[in-house]
Image (cartoon, rainbow, N blue to C red; front, side, top):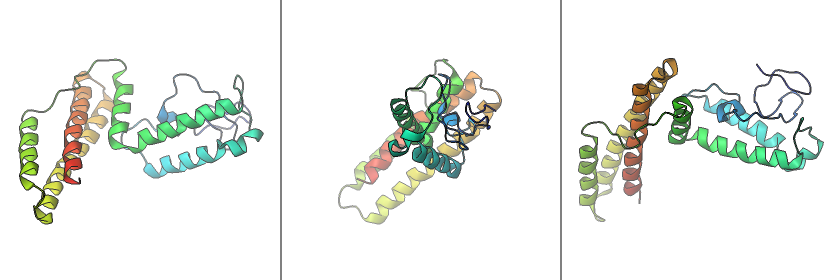
Length: 202
């Protein structure tokens, strides 16, 4: 565990000492998980993420920055404003299932190229059939018909997310190309499912 440059306490977040509230100098390799003091994993503790975000946001607020030590090599308020922007972007990314998946996949892939169009056999045909069913609904369709179709798409989306979690667990143990491509394929599927859901709630 890294230590605070000022008080020597062990750091929970790579960005800020939660004991003395000193903003820490960040090396370029720090990722969003390290910013919030979370393990690098797809299944994360949302409450822990929220708590870390609230703590960081409060401590890095401009109204409180005049009294904070920003560490060696930092530039005071400008440095903490840039860090606050990074914290906000990191929070948005980690809160979203798809954004967190894509971000973590990028970390695990470490530059390996993946096929961003690959889909499971038969998936596109299923999507075309669902698209046709949505088209057939029309504006005068009974609400229960639209609701039933939305529930079918949501069910498929839940299956995709559950499979993605399993694939991330496998990739965490051994990030081979097949596991990583499986995750990419899951992300590709979600784009289609999300577009169908958006049509169903228009």
